[in-house]
Length: 136
Image (cartoon, rainbow, N blue to C red; front, side, top):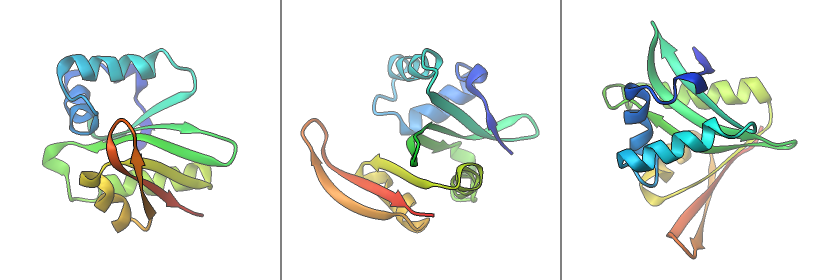
């Protein structure tokens, strides 16, 4: 089930999952990422939860015309089992509007496999990145 887990963001199992997708996966970087969500009223932090265990996380922002995915990651032992796809499908069902994400080369395949159109662009700070768009 896809549900709001912002109150659980600092739990160790959640921090480990965040570390897989955060730009800085160090404990300090993960803490900074968690604080960003905790201090923001506009950033959402949801997770895929089964039997009380968090299997995947998704940080996103809802705009008037799109949902912008900032962070998506799945527990190591549950990767390639449909959890990421289930979170994307849940976002589509919840909001019924375009989904967008900017990502790096290592993660662009995840979005392509789920039907996102991808366009490469040069980010001055990070180099090559990809804009990923899934239209309704």
